[in-house]
Image 1 (tube, one colour):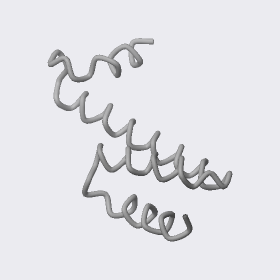
Image 2: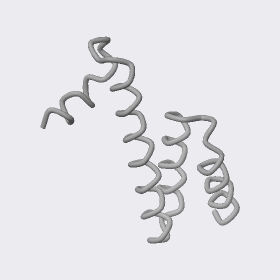
Image 3: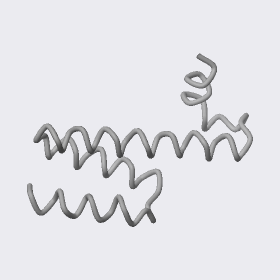
Length: 75
């Protein structure tokens, strides 16, 4: 429960930088996993949206960029 509360309030300035980094990492993994699941279900538009959300968390992630480009080619 504490983790969910911290996640919702991660930008309030009360968290240590390493904790914010950990929560951003969790958000990245969640978006990628949701994107993978949506792609496997054939929901390409939703998968693309999740990968784009992942890139807002980590714009330099080459793996996410590669997967997003592959999805866009199939759309």
